[in-house]
Amino acid sequence: MNDELWCVICVSSAQEDLTMSEAEQMLTYARTDRQSKNITSLVLYSNKNILILLEGDKAMVQEELKILTVHRGHHSLIKMYDKPITERYFGDYSLVFKSLSKEYQNLDDFKDPEQLEYFNEFLSLNQPIPIFVKSFIKNNG
Image 1 (cartoon, rainbow, N blue to C red):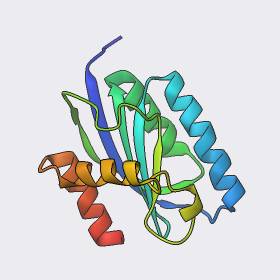
Image 2 (cartoon, rainbow, N blue to C red; image 1 turned 45 degrees about the vertical axis):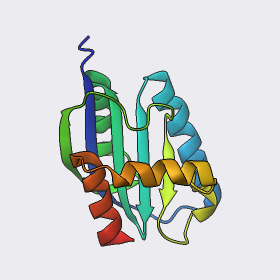
Image 3 (tube, one colour; image 1 turned 90 degrees about the vertical axis):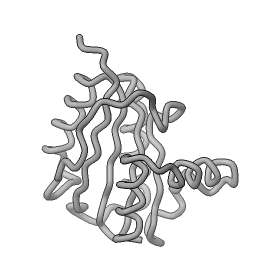
Image 4 (spheres, one colour; image 1 turned 120 degrees about the horizontal axis):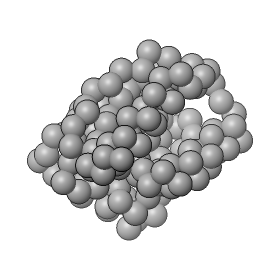
């Protein structure tokens, strides 16, 4: 198994509207699944637009991307970034979720001031991955 640390960023459109309960169940499942694969991730949601950032072992991240391409919740999934990284940005989290729209704000993991500060510090980095995430926020927020 290749243990090179890797990052993939993809964007998609939500295939359907989920109830709050369905969205919460999907996030809970994804957290458990990614934790078992040692994948850390960020999911941004804004008015049916989704950004998914995956970090971990290259083979595991690539396999997770394959799963996402056939997942019923995504439409027109596009890979935007697919490169090695030297360290994880979200190493403490199997999945953190940020809602940029009112929909699903109750599920937002960045309500706590400490978490929000961490996210803002990430966005302030002048590096390709945070710049890409900032661009998504600017265009969809």
